[in-house]
Length: 515
Image 1 (cartoon, helix red, strand yellow):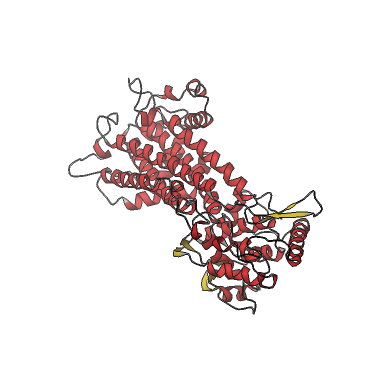
Image 2 (cartoon, helix red, strand yellow):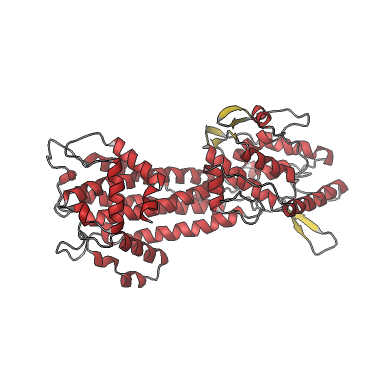
């Protein structure tokens, strides 16, 4: 992938992921983008100096102070003050990857033109990304309306300074070492910004944390749904399942895109299997028979959320915004609410519910694999000498605990709201809380799938020549599992096996090998 271009119009989820995790470089602004930014900024600056118009947050206070006028001479100080006053986040720091994603998204948003700020503001964020200056951002405190103010302020305070060039600078990592923001910027050779009108608010008044968490979560979700299909297919073979439930005609009749995709993927995974259909059962329990009907809607939800996040990346999310006009003036400036994160909050909640179902479903199959009467003749708890040995019984306990944890975490955050700012900001999205909860859910889902992979591989080895009778894709998955964990006949510690398989899932090696 070439260096990422910032235009405000074409940023992709894949580029955000690359900047976050791979430290992909970001191009300097093109002449076209720079000119567009300069044109709107100069118009706004002239309009402010005429002193005959009121612009929210430019020559007024913020929130409940919006009716209080600010002189044009104090506009730069107002920009710095709004950043300082919003440095109020608490808790452990966000992962550096999340902060980098926030920075590239905010840079792209401001480069779009309607923000009407100087290109040097975006230049500074780009330079910080390219020179590995990553602000220390505490993870809690965003309401998800008026954007992610407190979290973005922790970035902006590093990048900006008081009028005298000094002032509070927060903290930042420079090439992995934590220090004051001012020291990090000096070591990187990046001057801190002395802001002018509007720029402080533009740096923080957006949904860049929620968008960052959402984009990175989409990448995780798209990987996890594939691993869920792989684990399910391996379980189907270990359970000697009835393959007719996955016939194309059945799923085409549903008229549901995700369901058709999942059924097709399962057929490819167990193609050539000599384990399936080796009993006289007519049909299986829902957790085996209805995999496409359950995982299909998960795929549909991920696809829907991806589209929303992608549109958000290239949206004008700031307040106020400057637009081209057909009137006497070439532009006009209006105040609105594009910073409100309700839509992003919905996406977090939708994904939390959908991804929790992956874990619910996976755990039911693990339970069945371990339970006599449900597992088509396999030994209890997938161990030979029962009684003396407990087998994989408690691995399923761990999965059940994670599934239950998800049920709490998946409670929609977007149905909650607390009025703020003297009721001027009387409804908020709580999407930032939803984003954090989604990430916890995804970590739990990873480990629940790991438990299913562990159980399914153990079960296959109890079938006569089981591994030799696997399908084309499941055979590859089984071999990768066995590189990490061995079949066992006597009790042993299980945490290392579960964590090794969770690491295998996160690596993406299984998907690459099967693809």
